[in-house]
Length: 266
Ligand SMILES: [Zn+2]
Image (cartoon, rainbow, N blue to C red):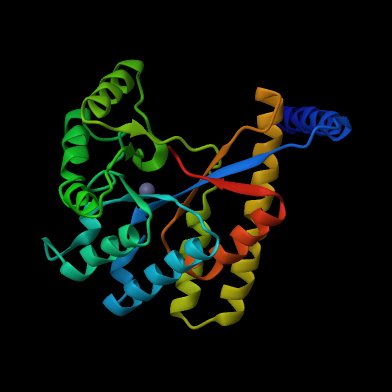
């Protein structure tokens, strides 16, 4: 009951805020940075090498079509097959860099700072840069950003400060997220339906996904107005996965339709 009341009050506040903005004459600028996590590919082991290449190329083609320069975050453990870095998987990252996209570090093994020992977590950060640093350098790029797995920054101020200082010492900036959307839940259902060959289901999930993302963007725009009094530049978090190989084009088209311009995290 209390939760329902709170939700209602929030809705009223958001509606009031939206009404206020509607009355304002100034044109608003909508800007958004696109970031993708879990490279080379989420759930990589469920796909053959050929499928991995196809999915990667389709995500990259969509980014290129919309002229999006993204930052894409790698888990180097996903490069390995039987404990060794696999040349074809590593080449997928070459393709990202060759397409002008930027790579960031997402931890070697996607460890959760809220559940593992912080020392182990810090070691995993450094283990997660062994392939991407030289690869980025070979493309005239560098690895500047770190994205926390699960967006977990540490349970205590002490752990947060210690890990943030460590990241800064090693040349990393912490990559923020303003639109966190649990899109990976759609992605898991989508990959299952696709593996079954259920095209009706993948089509309906894909359409739902784009609708859902736009609803989330509505919500975060309202939050932005309520908290900052204006639309802040947003940072979108999505994943390198089959869902986005098929539906990122529709999502980016819809965002452009709402007036969004792409920005790159500088
Ligand atoms: Zn992740």
